[in-house]
Amino acid sequence: MKFLTSGKVKDLYDVDDDTILFKFSDRVSAYDVKFHQDIPQKGKVLCNFAKFWFEKLDVPNHFIQKKSDTEIIVKKMKMIPMECVVRGYFYGSLIGRWKNGEVSLPTHTDTTMAAKLPAPIFDPTTKSEHDIPVNKQKALEMNLVTEEQFEYLKTTSVNIYNTMAQIADDVGFILADLKLEFGMINGEIILGDSIGPDEYRLWPKDTFEVGKIQESYDKQILRDWLTANGYQKQFEDERNEGKEPTAPQIPSDIIETITERYVIAYEKLTGNSLI
Image (cartoon, rainbow, N blue to C red; front, side, top):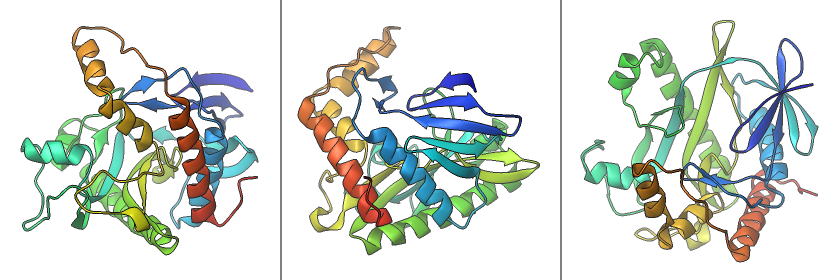
């Protein structure tokens, strides 16, 4: 197989004219910064989660088969240059954007941190090194999608979120938000990339409390540590100075917690053992 490229988490290999191999690594990134340390078991969790969700969701997708505990074979497709984000709770970057008047919310929305939104909202971004939120008008102006495609992606993404949120709820989790990617094969829109705790926020229901930073079973653990220790601002300052952000050393207890919670999330959501 021919090596194609390395992303933040996956390495891609050309299998044949129609298929690609995704090899999931233990690498981790946050705030668009790649870290030098690995998260043990992360690649295995992401690979198995990808298989689980692609087979579970009743949506056309590019998954063909799992090749190993860290590899899947998928169909080649032309990626749509828009990331489809669905938010079910008032949390994360949505708070700051709402305060700055960059996004509007339905009347009578509870704007307490972590409050459930009246209904899930479709909040897409560009697909780039530093994703930029876009509304329908902006997406059309930038030629990211057609109007018909935008409406299909909006409806489909919200439906997927609702399905996944119910599955999570049944086993004691809250799915706060979700990022999906789609592509085109022979004119048909297909769900692609991968779906796992690098692509969503997952909170345990038994510790959930509105108004507080939530206990997370996803990559937010690392983001929260970076923010609490001033690294998020450091990254922004370094970028403003034209420098490449310097990745700090992740404490061993943070690494261990991420591994533990990724495994717990997988086993609870799927009902399968990772071993």
